[in-house]
Image: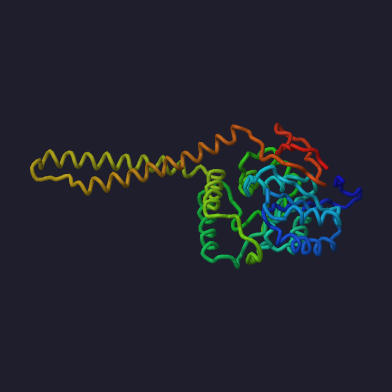
Length: 338
């Protein structure tokens, strides 16, 4: 059965949810979503995208689909990671607005009503939900605060802070993101870089009830670097200025040492410890700078390949996107739509 929006004057809104091993959260998530949307005068669709779960997430969603025609499912061919899967599901619908929502219940579905209310004012194209506080690991929350502060200082654009991407995105934003998207996108940053008007709704993030987060320390570091290289050229400039500074400092130091040795040949000692410390310090700066440059080169390389965002195994009750831009679709479907 193919999902189609009812032929009426109601606006169409899609709720887009990435999933990975969320079998313990699916039923409660669906219940809380429907409790909100059943009282709103819109044509809703609920799209789950499974990122190759190893538990019963897919069977749980399919069971819900049998009793609710608004629910659709996208199955990925492989586990492509959170960044790709979440972007793909956000761009999966041509509704008037798409709402991105995590499946772990840390972001409350009850805010859907508030998001739609703000969107209907037609002032902002995107309304993000941002965390004013969190019941998650306090140390992790503080590190995230520090990261977003640094990202804001380094970014070439004003960026949204303390957001998982949870929010509502107008259709024109979704279409623009499909035009600009690369194979490893930082969606929040792209929204800001494109110049869309956005606002925020503050909330308290809840502690994860069931399951285990797939966001490892390495993922958080990778995601942090992705945001930096997407939004800012300042690190490259700092490397350039740093190179000039340390190069000038090294030249001055070498000149002083050389003249000191000439003037005080028998008494002046270079000092192995001093030279070793200086060498290690400069080596650290060089390696760090090469690493940053490498991240930018890798970012450019990924974009130049123009790879698809991911490969879908199948879509059930989810219509294909309308073709736009040079990349007719941000995904490649390897099976027939059901």
